[in-house]
Image (cartoon, rainbow, N blue to C red):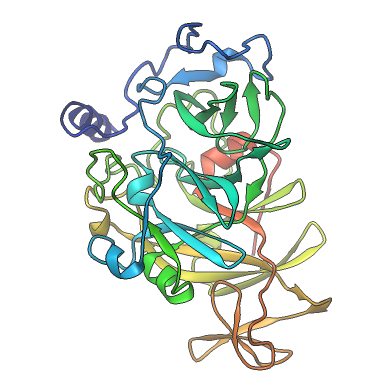
Length: 374
């Protein structure tokens, strides 16, 4: 951890990267000058839970006018196994490389006519995509410079209410207790995005900011033996804090699948909250939080999660000759849940809400979560 802090300070001084380096032991202080619109009388958490991450309000700048390029253009600077946040709405698909998101944490965008916020908190390794529509109003988001349970706290520029990135819940201000609508997204490799969404667009490095995209300012953070940075309070000991976990959410229930129990499996069938589901391993990606150059980093697994109910019928999947097939029709399926050959060609499995995070973060926000045991 000492090496991480040293790199934070060097990066902060010389290459303008978004480090969380200050005030780890101090509760956040509020200023009406900094937050003129925020109603601090409305809140559902104790202010003592909030810490300064170092940068000030908007010190980590959100991307408000994102530009996009085709895959052939992105190949010039994006390696095949680099991780991207992939989201598809209707007929449109976009990819948001983590090498860009870790310097901005929020992208305010529109996809297929829907206003969305694509978010990533490096300290929790958590990517979330939300609708920016709240009660008929379109919001846009920025960074507060504050953390809770080591996780990014966002704010909306319309009311300056504060929101938890990990849960999408309004914490302070006008939108206290309001929940953003989460949209299903995937962490996959750039290579997989190209293969399965050939007409998809990729967030461009032309962001309007000067950053060392492709570099990892959190070098060495992705070590299962590390402790979370700027985490206040007790840490759940059921899993190693920095272990990667796949989270699945159905209705208001969550379940965790630790990588230590699923990483040798290509397909996992399970039933949770009354819903039969299947987990497909989508392949390897580089960790965005390991080496200084992301494309020098270790490889980790990526997964997608689907309901196995299609047109009121249950499907059961198996892996044969490097291909996913269902037992009922022998149709062949892609790792993004689309039938590519056979009787069901063109059909899409219903995607379930899921994400890949560090265990400590999910357990901090969801202490009653069920943990998968094979």
